[in-house]
Length: 185
Image 1: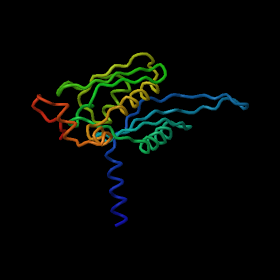
Image 2: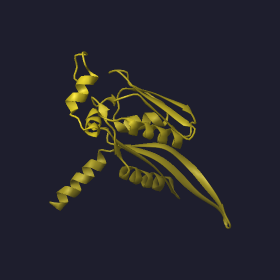
Image 3: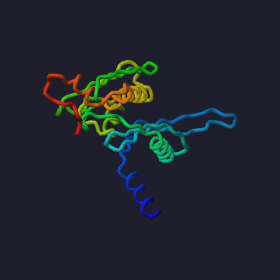
Image 4: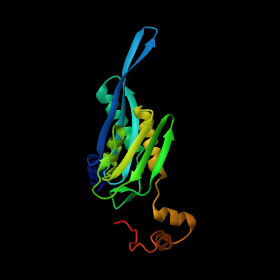
């Protein structure tokens, strides 16, 4: 039975999508000369609504990428997706000088994003979204701002629980007279 659990964990880890955002050479000047290392920024997701990111340093590039991906797997968070293809509401977030705007999109729109944001949405499993990054183009700021914006998206079930009401009461008011219930599949 313990072997089955280990096999299941390996299967789950094999299904994760790893996206390398950037690799940079970092040099530190010390008394004996220069100490050169590599910094890697990695995004990891399962393609079904869970995603995480991390940065790590090591003496070699593969070691830095491996360390960053392990840290990213430990810091994964769940994002509520509507119909499994787009975010639930329009959000924006600002971290440092990086400002990002995320908008829901209709079916068939595709991922309209550039740079590190596209990698995040691919790992997350988002199929339709419109996004814009304004201000800083630093990869770390854009990734952190995107994750901050994704944290702001909440599902109607979460809102209903927070308000102490039933899910159907929240959905009925939101979609009153529009002919759909708003429930995701």
